[in-house]
Structures are given as C-alpha cells and as structure tokens.
Length: 402
Image (cartoon, rainbow, N blue to C red; front, side, top):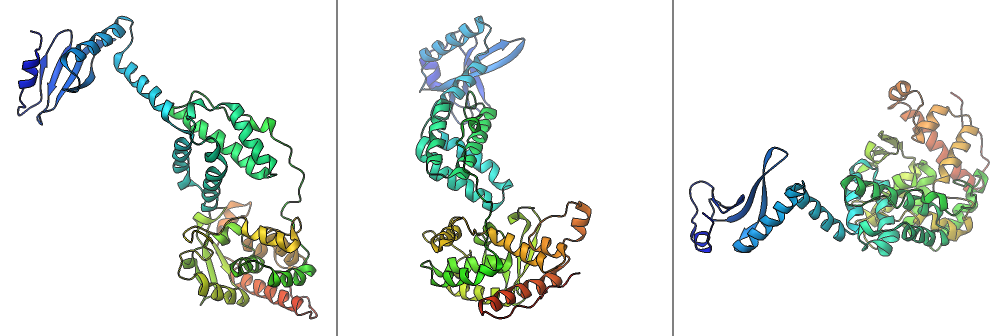
C-alpha cells in the first residue's frame, strides 16, 4: 500500500531501524532516534543500490515522489542516480571554490615537506601577489589571460624571481585542483613561454676581502635598525644562508659552548648543521638577546614578532648603503669561500662550514660530524682577520694547508 501523510507523521521509532514502503522503490527510513529519511531502492548494472532523497518533514511525501520519478528517468537513460548526484555536488562545489581556498589547501598539503624558508616564501607570495588579484575568483573559471596579466604586473616591477616562482606555484596549484577533480584544466601551463626576459645579473655578488672595512664602516653609520646590522655581521662571521639566520629560534644557540645547531628540517640539504661561533659572533648574539630574547625567534619581524624578519631586510639594508649589485646577504658565503680557499684551508672544512654535501654519499655521511674543531679554529681566525683589517693592521697569512 502507498504511504500516507498520516502514516508518516505517526510513525514512531523502534529498537531497530525500519522502513515503510511507498511504491516503485520509494521508502521512508525511521531511525532509532526518530529521524525519518527518504530512500530510493533500485538496481543498476545488476547491483542493489540505495539513494538518499532527503529528510521528512523538510521533504514532503509529494516531493519525495517527484525526486523518485526524476531518479527513475535517469535509470531509464542508463544513468546511475547516485553517481549523477555526486557529480552535481562536485560541480556545485567547484562553482564556489575560490582560487584562494584551493591554493591554501595546496599549501597545507605541501607545507610539511618544505623547508621553513620555502614555506614562508610561498605563503608570502600567495598573500601579496596572487590572492589580492585573483584569490576570490572561482578556481574553475580562472582563464590563462588572467594569469598572464597577473605575472606581467610582477614583471613590470622587475621582480623577475618572484614572477618565476609565481608561475611555478600557480601551475602546481591548478595541477592539485585537477587531481582533486575541482577544476577542468590547468590554465597555468607554459606561462614561461611568454615570460619577460630578465636582464642578466651577477649571481650573489660580493665585495673583495679588502673592501670589508669600508663596508662595515658604512654599516655602522647606516640608518637601519640594530638587528639588521647584527644580521649582516653574523652572515659575514658564520657564512650561513640568510634564510637559516632569519628563521633561527633562540633555542638553537648555545652561547656558553659557542655553538649553533641547526636541525635537518631547516637545512637545504636536510642534514643537521653545526655552526661554530667565533667570539665576535657570541658578543653580537648576546647583544641581540637583550633586544629580542623574550621572543622565540632571534630575528622577529618588525610588525609581527611571531613571524621572522623579512627576507628582503638584509639586502635592502645593503642596497641603501650603496651596495646594490655589489653585495648580497648570500654573497658573504662566496666571499668567505674565496678568502679561505685563498688562504689554503682544507677544502673539506670550508665545504662543511658552508653546509655543502659531498658528492660521495658514503663519504658525506662519514664526515657528517667531522671537522668541528678544525672549523672552529678556522672561523675564529677568519673573524680575527676581519678585525685586523678594520683596525688597519698588517694581516699575516693565518691559513694553513691540511
């Protein structure tokens, strides 16, 4: 017998879930909690299936029958109503899924596998260059010309490295969406074909050792905050990468033993790195601790102390000092390598100080914890040589071959 409104309304819950049949596969499912759910029982390709049609009383008996009839029309066309319903849901979700929502999901998926510096840079570019322009656009509707215009704006301000990264990450975001089935294609492919040609630049430029006294004198007189000045001096004294320095938490430093231990997760080569600290570096860090020691990060951001100092801070300070195109934060690594190799220090000591891996993986693993004592002597001699240069003293050959 067909169901009636009265029978539905008066149906009471039982100890077990039960169903009241209507006609042509439609039934009302009454749960033990008293819920009343419309179901359509049908067969597709020889398999018994069940389709949810909504809950009573939000969906009336008449509406449930209409939904049943619509589903049976699909069956007559050899279309599975359950699969069709899922496809409609996916299409509706894709219409409201904005690029920002998709990009943040992509970021959250990849962030655990990235080095902190990479994760910080990716989020910065997303929030400053991508989201303000197309973040609110439905991801499935974004077209290639929009992405070309976005990248062109970045290129016009001559931020060619940013443009390259943005092209790369846009392609990855849409590939991620394509794999999830929420975008119809990847409009960010081949954006490099129309990329502006960046002028040739000297990679990681650096001054000569003889120019250091003038650079440090200008640094002392520069109109930048003291934390930036300390950061520049520490890059010179330790040869770490700028990202390793600006993201460093205080708990990595042991000033009593004059040692800085950077965990593998923060290193480019994903291998722990021990940095011996010359006396001059320890003095700088003690001074810095008086300024930022109450924060987790040694170099917190100026506006948001929970975030690291901007990656542009060091290079901007050097640029305002007149060293644009002549010296970068990363360039101090090249300066130290050149100077110490010229002095005849053991190449393995220098490479380990720079946290470069050995091409021989077995030898690299064996040497992982080696050379700390030798590097400590070498880096102290380097720091003393800089002091001697700045004092306009006669600098003797302090290096020894090994």
